[in-house]
Length: 428
Image (cartoon, rainbow, N blue to C red; front, top):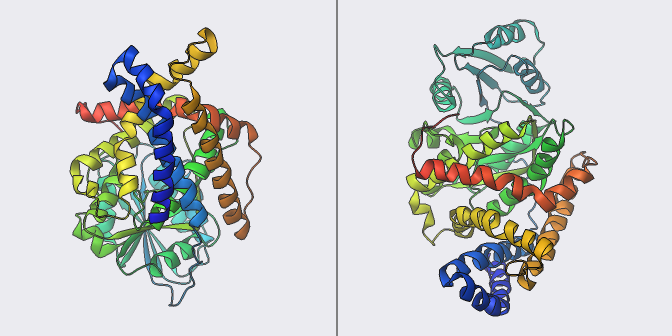
């Protein structure tokens, strides 16, 4: 980490030196506070973050975990609300897993108004399943939210290791075994391990093609680097494993918009480690319209602010993952600077030849960002190749992800930050 921080610091120092004339020019036009807001949010902080990511990825030479103990029994919790179209396929993907230990699979129907319960009962009665797998249906009397459903499942759990799985998520071969191996062979204070979530419906349209690259390059690689620093910041509910005693210690899932990030930060705040299994793959359905995508990312960003409000102690600099915690803390600044400074600055440069924002230092950040994406691509492609997966040909999505994805994401993120800061009514 010290080497990565040193590289990021050197890049930031060089960027600051080059930015001084730009800062002085902008301060004469906008004043010093706005000049610092613009230059810091558009160039200095993104440059430091990219420098840290590049050096961390180049230094990442993690060994593959090797199983050294018998596979333990698992409880798998699947919270389902109006999932009649996908829940049976999810259960079938579990039935295809070659996991020799006992599996208690608990589907918690959260007051669904469709045929989810009937579909689950049919799957239990009719679908072939290995003898070590036992599926149970837990029926909630009314819809109470995902956190309440998962807590009901936790109270019903028979085993010490708990896996959460989304109802529209399919497991790739040996995903369960690999997730468990990563958890068991991690340092003893590892309380949870996040699996690798990829996009299942990426062929649907442009918005899903963009998200394919977000999950493949952005989310997966950031979790990879965070785990090197002893603290992945989100063990996502779509596919993660937890130690039951730690879940009970932190009080389970809180009824918040971002229940998975809040739970992860509760775990981290007690000194536990959260790992990442880069080789435990699942495929999930992502939003297929911008409106649905906007609502999802608004929830995620609101969940981040919830986590900071509930667990501000994670900002203490004694933690190895502090650089990423600080970066998350700066996300509102970065999103606002991108949307209200960088985008207008590019438009002003292209249409009116006004280069107040789109100057030399801004251009220097672009090749650094491209380097990050290229490096992340080759790292992830190598992981895929080791496990029999291929990167889909989605070059349009790749180009647009590099050029405009932040423009798609930032409005939803800013809306989420603002909603939580102003304490507006929470909706799911």
